[in-house]
Image (cartoon, rainbow, N blue to C red; front, side, top):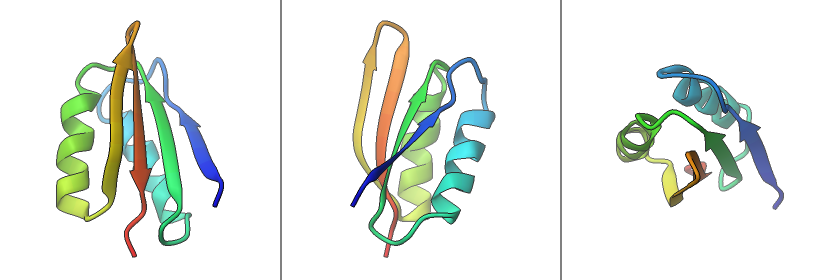
Length: 75
C-alpha cells in the first residue's frame, strides 16, 4: 500500500496534528501516513495522539529541525 505524504512544515501547534488527523480520516485501515513538520512540540503531540487514538506511530525522527512521523491507520 502506498504511503500518503503530508508536509506541514512551517505550521505551529495544533495545525500539524489537526491536518494529520484529517488525512487519516480520509484513509483506509492499515494505510500509512508520513508527516513532515518543523514544530518541535509536534513530537509530544504525535506520541500522545497515537496512544489515545489507537493509530500506530511506527517511526518518529528529527534531522536538521525537520520532524518526520510515520503513522499507520488503525483497523
